[in-house]
Structures are given as structure tokens and as C-alpha cells.
Image (cartoon, rainbow, N blue to C red; front, side, top):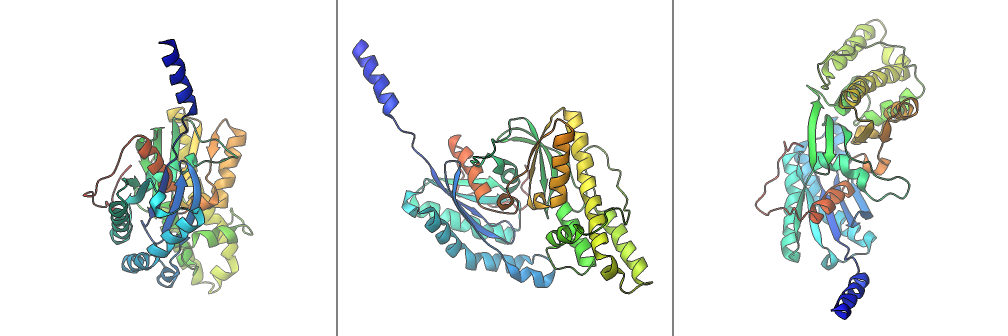
Length: 354
């Protein structure tokens, strides 16, 4: 009996952890992305951007889905090549089920399901918004992931949400936009000034040399943790219309100040709600995700708050702010660990909620 027990211990100590290799696909909007993860470590993260939408001042759904069809095979091949992984070595295939544009989602899901069937390996469906939050759990030598619970904040062109996150898949939306998302407000204000789509990065760049106090815009009074951006957008449009009648060069003469002022206001609106939520929930950990998380003003204000208060701030690396497949892969990794596998009959859901 003693010898058997001793042998068992030796066998256990010599057992090696079997790693999982996940191919993740993201196609919710206008970026075709693929990534390969070894457990929670990113081996490759490839993105094909669709420049065609710049000509239209926004994403055209039909053009987006066509571009996904053209891009998905070469992007997946590139991701596998960079990761130095053969498709036969893959453990599972993950894809974005929603939310997003239905045509774009269908391209990614169809490809993922076909590959899963042909390789006879598990399929994992992922919520795009959960992925923006959980991207912080991707292996990072410089910073540890946040501890639960925390306040998750998704800020992008299509979403603005405040989410109470108690565990990997225990999330509750406590606040959202009543109209425009913050990224959408950036783009529409930028379009008013004649800036190219997407206008957010350009506004951020021009604001550096502007005076954020030059023009004042109203801060909407919205109950609880919800936000609204339509009023600010209208106030900005009215300001431009009123002054351009007096001075045809008003935008050109005041471009930097206009950018700095509107950026300050848009950021202040969401920051007020973040502060209100942390005080109400008595949570000092704030986790940011989404494309607008790349904005320098957002990052500056959050870093200032972490210094002046006891907030613990988590801002993703730039490569994980915009839509990418690495964030889809990390969610899939934790789903695989829990054996929460997807089904072939599951259809995409453009309105999928947290």
C-alpha cells in the first residue's frame, strides 16, 4: 500500500500541463482579425483594416461583409504562420457571435464553424463586449490582471457601457448610452469639422495644441449611471453653424481649440459617471476597454485619478483597444477551461448583450 502511494505521487509530479492552442476570429464590424493563443499567451494577432469606408464617412455594412470574405483566409493564414502553428495542432476555434453587423458576423462565424468541423475540434462563441473587458487577462509580464470585482467601462464607436464585473462571466450592465456612443460622438463632431473618418484619433491629435477651455458645451443631466451624447453633438453643430455664418474660416481658425474643447466635454461626461459608479458600488478598480481607450485625454484623466485617489486603473495596451482577435481568444481560453463549448446551430446575434 505504501509503495503504491509513493508511485502515484511520482507519476503526478512528472505529469506536464497540456497547453491549448486557440485560433480566434473577429469580424464584428470593419476589421478582419485572427489570433493564435497558447493558453493565455498571444502568439500572433493580425488585423486587416478596411480603408474603403473612409470615402463614405462611416462603415457601409455591405462593403464590410464583402471585404471580410476577401480578407479572412489570408489573415488566418498569416496568424498561423506568425505563431508557427499548423492548423492540425489547434485545440479549438473561437469566433465573435455578437454584437455587431450581421453580415460581418456571418463571415467570421461561417469560417470558424467550417474549420471546426473539418478539424473536428471544439467551437467557442464569444461576446465581443465581454472580450473588450477581459483583454486585461491576456498574459502581460509588466502588469497583473485585475482582481474581481471591478467596474468595467467599454467605450467605442458603437458602445458606451458601465458594467459591474464579479467574475469572468458574471457581468451586469449598470449604465449605458441613451443615444450615441462616445466614439460615434467623436466621429460626428469630426465630420462637422471636415475631418476624415474615423475622426477620433485626428481630434485627439489636434487637441494637443488646443485650449480645452476655449468653447463650453453642456454636460447632460442623466439619471443613475447612464450617459447621453446627442445633446453635446447638437450643441457643437449649432456652435459651428452660428459662427461660420459670421466667419467662413471659423473652423480653420479655431480647429485645435474646437477639438480640445469637444474632447474635454466628451471625456468629462463618461468620467462623471465612472466616479459616481465607483462611489456607489464602493469599488476602486476601474477596467477600461474599447477603441476610445486609446484616446490620450481619457488615459491622462484616468492616470490622474489613480494618483489623486485610491483608484486602481487598468488601461489596455494600444494593440488591444480597437477590435482585435486576441481579446476573442482570451475569452475563449477561459470558456474552454470551464468546458463552455459553442454549438454549430447557434446563429450570430447582432444585438447580443453582456
